[in-house]
Amino acid sequence: MAADRFSILIPSWNNLPFLKLCVEAIREHSATEHEVIIHLNEGADGSLEWVEQENLPYTMTPKNEGVCVALNKASTLAGTDFICYVNDDMYVLPGWDEALSAVVDDLDHSEWFLSGTMIEPTVSRNACVIAPRDYGRTPESFRRSELLREFLEQPKADWSGANWPPNLVSRALWNRVGGYSEEFSPGISSDPDFSRKLWEAGVRHFQGVGGSRAYHFQSASTGRVERNDGRRQFLRKWGMTQSTFTRCYLRLGTPWTGPLSPQPYSPRMIFYRLKSAFRLAFSR
Image (cartoon, rainbow, N blue to C red; front, side, top):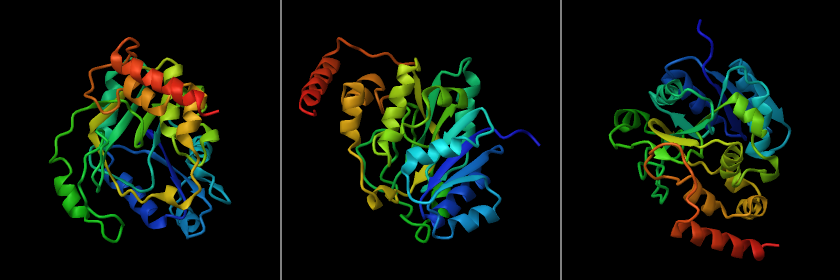
């Protein structure tokens, strides 16, 4: 049997029906074998028993520690060269891993960060997603057959600014930047912070892959926790607003044209840097 391609990390917090569906999709719709690693936050809803029954490797914390701690703990079990983060409320679709692997195999270096493309049920201003495409908000209301017939109907080219899961990075790069920053627990703004750490490490290849698709139920686990003030944390840590980084550096959601570089003298960059300076001055 060929070696596993990706180590897929799935954080889950008492979300067993979604977790089952997520793992089922990975098993059914992946073109190659992958190592699936679960982190259970609490695991009090039968998730622990199910994960053990399925012989899935897992880590666990007795209470909800959020996605940052979950991902970092799960990553210690990774046995492949690639770390792939998938949320438990995502249903990956046929071709998802082939599209990511095709980009990886075409590169001659490991300094990259890739994201798949989410299909979401609600109207969104996020240019990176395909929405609104409502195929259900829960496993019970999920219209799987309809989604599998239609998920490729809406064209989506590759886009700039890899950020959210499903995402993929080399394990060496993950380890170099220390995984996700646990000071952002339970996780608000931890995704752009991770991208910013990669930027500081010299990465400029941030590519969203239009052919790698996953349905996102948007089950909103964050609604069950006390949210950290991620935007203020990001501002204080990096000296710029999150929107400055995602819009002026990552150029998030714009058509993919190749590796990135900031444009320090553009009017857009000047505006956002001034905005960052103003907000930083009043955030102390």
